[in-house]
Image (cartoon, rainbow, N blue to C red):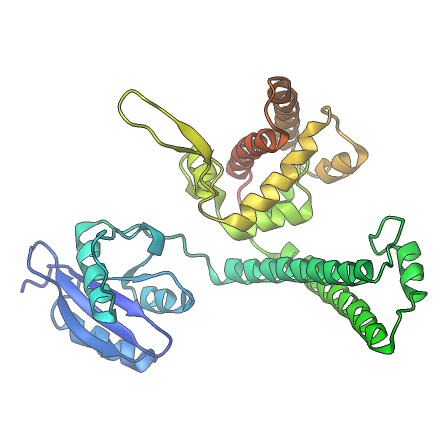
Length: 370
């Protein structure tokens, strides 16, 4: 084998083992299954030395999964090419009902050689750290919401319904402090429910405090500040979008970015018939959720409120102008679509799709910190 002939290596990665297969570039012969190795660095080094004995041009690929990006960073740190591929975009034969580690590794090697695999975006260590902290905050928010709902449902079942706004303000807490359940056992359940809510509130506050402390030192934080020029995009929304999507400018155009977060309509077309359905909901659901939440702000007339003005005071004039342009356009578009009889949820989704396009434009105008 010539030393310049590339070798495409498929890795089926698990917690305790990695199944390995390789395919020779420029040939049509079937990939070769090497076997299973361990996940230690010593095992990987031994595999690399073995494969480099065949050729110096190695290219690895494995599916994105719970094992994370540690293998990718280790291989690229050694100067080796590696792709982390999207499992949902791997071509599958409809009639293939057999799945084994060996077959998966061989198929990865074959598809890597043919160029039929789609690589995912791999964040840096710092980007992944901020993203994990944002996701921890979101998990705490969901857990807190569930704890409140369980407590409200328990009280409603006992006929104890708070007539005011049950948003855990001072008046609501005074009401809860006076609640007496019919039996001692139910009183225990009630007190544990209140404690569960308080614990989740404290947990959420701790995580948000850490975000407030760590995020300003993040190299992408200037983009987070710049995105807040947009109405409805406050600190949490901007931070979530940048943490989940990373470098927005890696997309060639805003249509690709909107498709990545699943905000483009699905399509079922054949021949001369063209039919579009609901949005695809593909890609990153967390970013899509906060974008839709932010889009609801455009149902009101365009206005630079005091809160928005405080956010944009430190931004360049060009970004302030872009934020105002987005607000005028999206507020007008919301009213126009509603007047045409569109459902508000459909309208807000369309606004969110344009909102991410304005975010893309702002990210291109606002470089990140080196």
